[in-house]
Every structure is written in structure tokens, then in C-alpha cells.
Length: 210
Image 1 (cartoon, rainbow, N blue to C red):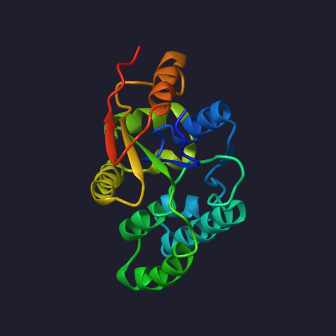
Image 2: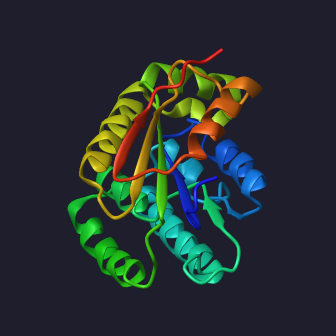
């Protein structure tokens, strides 16, 4: 397995971040940090309630900072695997917030960001909006059914743009559109084998699938 001590899994909704984080952590005997899905403002945001985007985003920002600062991946004696990258919080803030809200958000984001270390490795899981929609339907969470195709496409584009410029860590880009490592053991095994190899800079992996 790669000598990376702090690995972050990233990608859009229902791409398989948590499943991969837990499988990888089990394989390398790492601590796991999972993003909270208990945001009390998220349902209001999906329903388009006024002001809910700012409340939901600030909740995520503070919660993610508290999680990462508590476990302190830079000093942990064990490897750490998370199912999110702290910087992704800003990606969603710029999609969902007004200019005035972003101005307030940025003050807190900068304060928190300077206190956190970057991962050794980021695994960026990508998929087409159509595939993400299929996985949302399969997951069958009522609030997620309200997410529009336009929003999914916007998030997908934002991730592509973000990782085309991200240089703070080594990055493995994995196209998951033709594989299902959440439900297919062989697909997961292939991905974990790829993660056992060193990654330098930005590398791309297109799984063969079963």
C-alpha cells in the first residue's frame, strides 16, 4: 500500500466516497473520518428555502473543521482516510451562495483552512451526471430526489474545474462511470490494487470493470 499517511477521497454526490474510504481504511488499518450527513439545514436547502444554503454551508464548514482538527491527520500515529477534502467546502459555497454570503463565508474559511494540513493523496472519483442520477435513484433518499439534473451537471463541472487546478496534494483521478465498486467486489479489488501503487503529481486511472 502507498506510504501516504493522510488520504482524502473526493467527488460528487453518490460517487462512492464513503464506501471507498471505509474499504481503504480497513485495508491499511487507518482511522476513518466520514463527512456528516446530519446537516439540519440540508432538507430545506434541497427544497429551495430562502437562506437555507448559507446555513447549510456554514454548518458543513464548521463541522468539517472540527472533525479534522480533532483528529489532526498531520500528527496522527495511524494513517487517516477521510471521505472529503476540506477545500471542497468552498467549491459548494461558490455554487450555492450569493456574493454577500460568500464574503462572510470566506472570512471563516480562510481562518479554518490555515490551521489544517493538506492530504498526502487525494483520490478524485468522477462520474457523469447521468450515472450519478442513477445512483441517487438507487439510494432512494427522499431529499436527494429533489436535486435537479442542472444542479448535478453544475457540481460535476465544478469538480472538474477544481481538480484541473488543484496542486496541494498528489491526486489519483478515477473514472467510476463504468464500474460499481460499491456493489461489485472485483471492481473494488481493482481500485484498491491501484491505490497500492505510488502516485506522483496527478495521475489517471480508468478501471476495466467487471
